[in-house]
Length: 95
Image 1 (tube, rainbow, N blue to C red):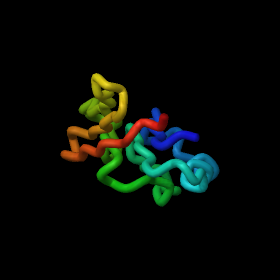
Image 2: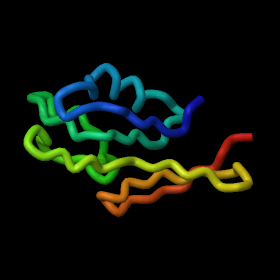
Image 3: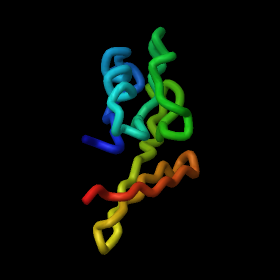
């Protein structure tokens, strides 16, 4: 019963409609992050822009932005951040 999904995709691979629909249909998943924006013809298969680390077609210049996960010392929460988008969100760990 995952809470968050992080997709290790490329600008031209991954993020299929089937994969994204499956993740979005999972009742416990509250956020879907992507490493790269999908720039293929089916570019509507993306999550929210603030949840994507790398935007545009990076064939010429890959800036290699990352998605970071930090777990609290107590283990009761974790934070996902996308520094390139100034996005940070904390999630509670299930017990």
